[in-house]
Image 1 (cartoon, helix red, strand yellow):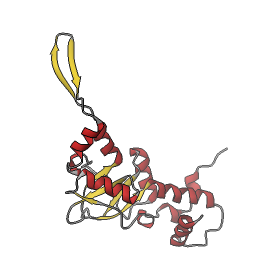
Image 2 (cartoon, rainbow, N blue to C red):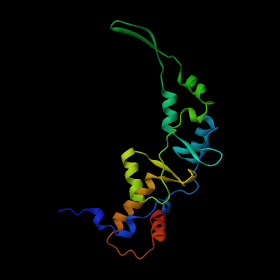
Image 3 (cartoon, rainbow, N blue to C red):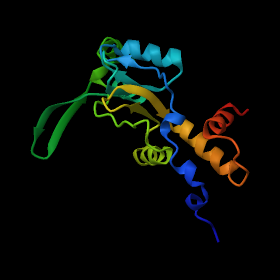
Image 4 (tube, one colour):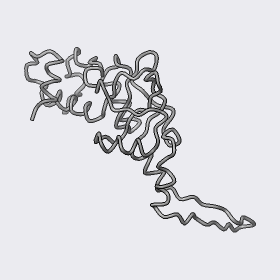
Amino acid sequence: MSEILSERIPLELQGTSVSEIMIKQPFVCTQDCTVSDVVRMLTENGVSSMPIVDSGNRVVGFISDGDIMGAVAQHRAHAIFTGGDASMLYFDDQSLEQRIEGLKDRNVMDFATRKVVCARPDQSIARVAALLAKKKFKKLPVVDDEGVLVGVVRRSAITKYLFGMIVRYGKPLSLGLSNLWHELMCAP
């Protein structure tokens, strides 16, 4: 007979806030960046996505490598005849290089997600984990009450935290949460 894991996790760990594991100074781009700027920042910083902020550091969008790849790979179909039971389409004949050339100077907001799902720093890790799982997101911006970016939480950080708790459960938890998190993140 299996046990329900949530009943075995100590109560003080169920409410641990996402601020404990978020990246407090995440890589961001501004809303006036070009696609070239964003690709350079993603590549140089080794990340696959980032929040887009305005001059007040408020989140106004989110861009990922998938958004950019989708824009590059997009073929446009043009209808030249529709009538009766038949339609005739032709697809653009631009090369990949031509599509990239046409995109590189466009504004990042042309391809960004504008309705951004964000977490708050006081939300529990469990709640944010459920949201990431449901939406199949890899990363969420963390904002304060005014929508100002205060961090980013990654699915991998939550996974490492949760797996660490599962592996360590049953052993004495004499460390405080901050020390426990540091031990989990710095373990070889």
